[in-house]
Amino acid sequence: MKKIKYNLKKMLKFLPIFIRSFILEHWSIFYYDDYKNIKAQIECYKPLYTKFDSLEDTRNLLNKIAFSGRKGIITCEHFCSEQLKQITDKNLKNNNLIVVCVVKNELGRIERWLDYYRKIGIKAFAIFDDNSNDGTREYLLKQSDVEVFVGTHDYTTINKIVWINMIIAIFGYDKWYLVVDSDELFTYKNMENIKIDKYVKTLKSNHVLIEPSMMLDMYSDSNIFSVSSKDNYEKKCCYFDNLGYYIKKTSEANYIVGGVRKRIFDNTKFQCLPVLSKKSLMFMTKNTFVYTAHTIYPFKYNYLCNFNSVLRHYKFLKEDYKNYVERVEKNNFYNASSEYKAYLDLYHKNTLINLKNSKSLKWKDSNSINKIKISDKAVTK
Image (tube, rainbow, N blue to C red; front, side, top):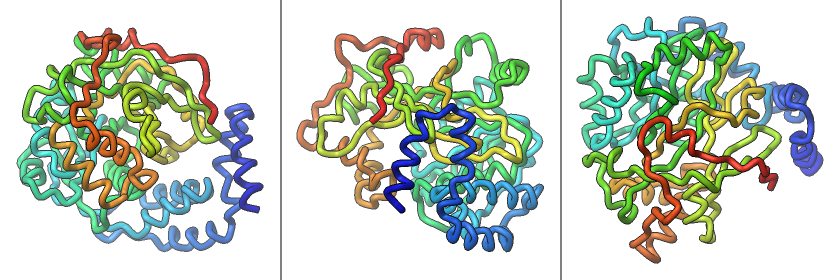
């Protein structure tokens, strides 16, 4: 039966999008006993530390997610067991655009990160602090435009998704959310002349409620882990690959893959083909859910790879080395942290890794987005 389910799901990518989406959203017909168990937990779900604006909407949404299959069931199990606590109340819920982020020990980078988003027009941040011990939480508590959240469980990739969705439910639906990591700078075309509030109004007027973005790895002309987060890393890490990107078609989504990390790290014994497409800027309704770091529910939004924005991604700063060692030790990231094992495996063999080559381009402004080329050839493996 397990093999039948695997082969059936693999075949879905050949079906039209609307059929594929419908089947995936009702996939728990193959896991019905598991679904019945988690459904009982959802019906009894009562958050201990937070008061949702609409608990009934949250329950209904969790039921839909659980019915989407094994991954949805696991996410809902974590959702029902987590105890999220908002430790500040700065009356930011009325904002129509909220930046949501999960951080851990980001004191060196968080000030510059906040400053960037404030300059493009962000007025409210909802940040989950994952047990920082370097002063990050204390710094965030002092910021008048930042609500700070904490939880009871340790970091896993599933728990991160739970935290993000809980924060969205607390702040409320029918508004825009920008979900980004602390090493990502959301960048859209012509942003030098248009603030982000005007940008989202344009999206909505064009009936675009989910903005697909591409993660664009940025790097310097020196060796990896040599530029500090305390430096002006946006200026120093100003190079990127504009070629070598492909579409990976799966049953659940069409992903962008490739880029500099594949170019450099794909030759190790560990799997390193990171997904470079994300749904970061989203108008969240009571029927919308962040499903994974790279996909969203309803699944129909996960097959679009055209983009007008990128997440400039600063992945190899000096402080990141220590973080990656911890991720490898804990095995708490996707696929037992195999991506980070690939980085460290190659780095320990040769600490003089320079990502820049003769084909690298230098970032000038948001119009540099137009230079990125994605191959029409799909990678189906």
